[in-house]
Amino acid sequence: MTQLRIAIQTKGRLNEDSMQLLAEAGISISLGKRKLLAAAKNFPLEVLFLRDDDIPQAVADQVADIGIVGENEMLEKKEQVQIIKRLGFSKCRLSLAIPKSEDYPGIEWFNGKKIATSYPVILKDFLDKNNVKADIHVISGSVEIAPGIGLADAIFDIVSSGSTLVSNRLKEVEVALYSEAVLVAPKELSADKRAIMDEMIFRMESVERAKDKKYIVLNAPKEKIEEIKAILPGMKSPTVTTLAEEGWVSMSSVIAEKEFWEIIGKLKEAGAQGILVMPIEKMIF
Ligand SMILES: Nc1ncnc2c1ncn2[C@@H]1O[C@H](COP(=O)(O)OP(=O)(O)OP(=O)(O)O)[C@@H](O)[C@H]1O
Ligand SMILES: O=P(O)(O)OC[C@H]1O[C@H](OP(=O)(O)OP(=O)(O)O)[C@H](O)[C@@H]1O
Ligand SMILES: [Mg+2]
Image (tube, rainbow, N blue to C red; front, side, top):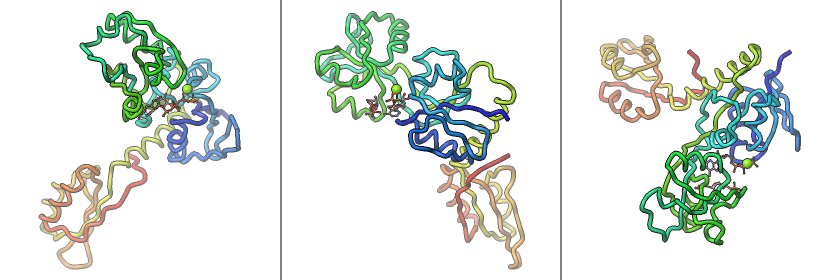
């Protein structure tokens, strides 16, 4: 039987969220110690654990069929892979930063400067686009200390909260890229493997859709049905059932988390009582 092989980061920032995504899709993987390849028990999927830097090439070379990787790493490697789905975690940006004490007139500041980075390809594209000629110095880690030890004038690296920059007395002056974890696949994937991937994505999206939604149940006087219906947007229209108590109904619907407090206020005003709000695990249309 056909199996789909997905490449996931062995350890690091992407690993936990990637594994959680599979778990939420009901795919359980038995993890042996130092196992580099693990099969799912209840889904035609194999997980290949790799360093994030190696994932774009593994997918392009069909060592893995699909992969989960930071968009920044995907763009840096310039491999023949495409984004199938943006995953919404490991959000960060790739930015240029300079010593805090420097005045910054604009991007021309970087002309003739030495910039330390682990992302030379993305940096070169960005500098070319902005007509800046600088010296790119590639280092594989601890990029932020480069200016402090006299290795470079500036850096180009991942920024999230900005605290690493602050503790190295640097300031962010240009953002070249906003990145997040992405699901990647080669341009061509066989029909049976694509079907497995689509089923996995369908499950992930059912969970994702439910995340910012709540299920709401309430009691209301019969004559208020229309008024309350107008407040509850629902998936299609709210469900209305008759209660044993004469003149009362129970209504249920789905609401967005962000509209929650506003809606609750309006429902109370309209005469709703016994309001229950519950989390939703999955939503399938
Ligand atoms: N501080 C951060 N906040 C959010 N996302 C981040 C942050 N740092 C890195 N990322 C994202 O997570 C990805 C993996 O980061 P991580 O630090 O685990 O990589 P790594 O050290 O290169 O790991 P590996 O050993 O697999 O090569 C990055 O490519 C980036 O997309
Ligand atoms: O803006 P911040 O929230 O400080 O995050 C940015 C830092 O996070 C990453 O490093 P990480 O912490 O993963 O350590 P690493 O150098 O071992 O990858 C990245 O390389 C930056 O140094
Ligand atoms: Mg890496």
